[in-house]
Length: 431
Image 1 (cartoon, rainbow, N blue to C red):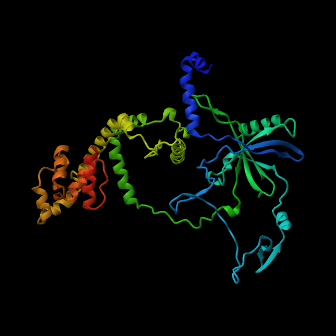
Image 2: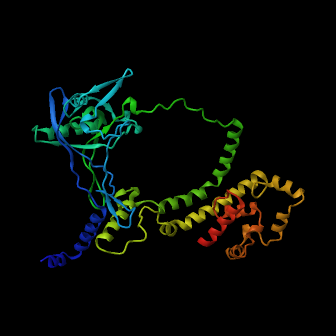
Image 3: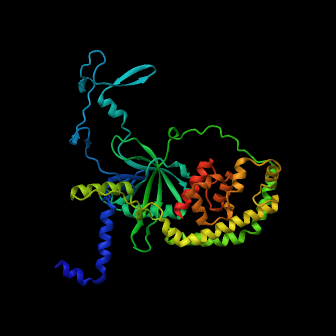
């Protein structure tokens, strides 16, 4: 019966299969309630009940035990912990252990019942103590992940209507609630900001991305905020440098239109679909590698050699889409830089005065070798450059010539001469 239904559905079977494979690979975890029927006190004597969900959960490889590989055969490690006295090395029983707190230099003992009372701050609940504009919430105030809450009709009938009215008011006025929050019994009370979220769907799959509801955003206490201390005074450039930089910017702006046209082409080719980053399309490579190994061991398959990492940029597609525009932009930028340097300093590369000084002195042996080593590296072809690399004659050129070559290729010009040669050789291998 199943194959005939699958065939009768026509082309719908392929999307269903793709969706099934995607769900299996994503290893999606069911969203379970973090708490249920929690009293939500909006005003004195005015309560509703809500449920809490932990929608933002980091997925890590599940580990039920540790395996010891110190011997020829792998064994499951069994952990044990014991407490001993310092004088006789006698094992201390659990009933002998007592807990104490230091106050004023002396230790005060508490019984287990008294310790429970110290941690008792009241029954679990959520109580609003005020409202503030959402603009007053700084971005650095995030302490832990937020908890999503939704109304529940089990304890208080009409909770959904009241919850909806509160949500609409917070969204309309861009307000947030500040509340006292105890998640469960014996839990430490915290201050939370109650933030509303509007429902949002995926444009292509129509799947829900963000649900409509309220989020409990934990706020830091004064002890959680680290004092920054006195800030050092920033270094301010003198007016002479500022005036000179204004001249440089004016000169560059005259030729900037040609560069910005190519920049727009590059940005247009490298944009994400609808300029939205969807993290669900990029699986965790470490987690997927863990499941690949488990799958291979369970099905007695060959172990994979290399993990598949979809977070690595697709360099070939980037080069195919925008490589031409990037190269054109680099050529234009180099031309404008050289033209500006020639006009500003009277030299091709901005070192006319330095080279005049060097020409007046007696050339060194390295420069004499470079003069007779062949054609200039700036205008050398790729084939001749490859011959220099193969023959090992690249070291006869000066560091300045190697830097000019690397600058023309858009590579880093820092480092020792050996580093520059290695960079040129790597460029030859890649091209």
